[in-house]
Image (cartoon, rainbow, N blue to C red; front, side, top):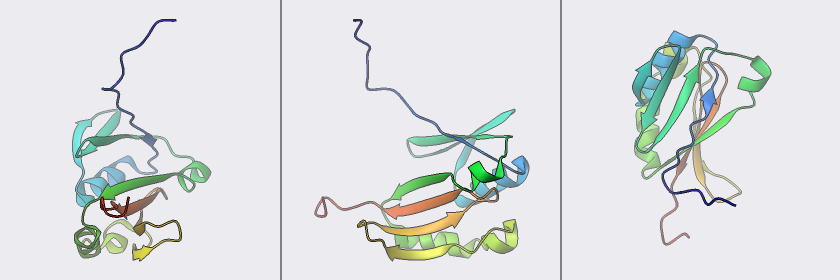
Length: 128
């Protein structure tokens, strides 16, 4: 069996968009950097990225979830709250950070296509 080199791989999920332009503006407002804008759009934050596609299926979009691990959830929550996402993008109001039964403190944000984002406080090394 051939051995493959590992260690530099990157996984990028494909997210749906009901309205491609609205979704692109939404992710830029959240603070993602758009690094490609064409038939698809690629967004980055830190070492993570995703591909926004011009494809939408309601059942899939509303069951799709992403997790963004952050070092300072309170700062993120202040940022998210100040954006006025429901007014600006017609999305459900974000849910404030709360400790979840599985041990992570999470705020919830839904994008214009129904994708649910878990913005989670990264556990400290003391919690590990």
